[in-house]
Amino acid sequence: MHESIRGAGGAVTTSAEEPTVGQNYYRISARLGGGKPLWILLNSAAALVAAAQQRDRHLINLVFAEVPGGEIYRRAGLRVATAAELEQPIEDRHLRVLTDDERRDVAYHCPGRLGDLLFNWFD
Image (cartoon, rainbow, N blue to C red; front, side):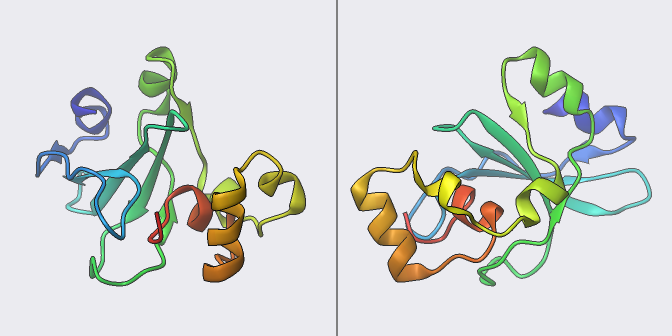
């Protein structure tokens, strides 16, 4: 994490926030070169890294961004999601790999994008 952010001319600004009620992922705050704030997100169950623009942490929907230094995470065995991938609408093929309980959560909460399913507020 530090290496990828330093490579973008930035710095990590907080330690990792662990998953909790309303957040099924780890979140770390960073500031890129030029002062742009960014969250790096990790869904450990899916071994998936993503990035989102920082904004009010109480807003449910994330604004996904590109992960700086993605190759560093790939070398560590993680998959890096692009903003375009995370903005895709959820399709039946995404739901097939979920458990029955997870599918019930999706039916109840109705996340609209793949990113809302992978980095969600209802686990």
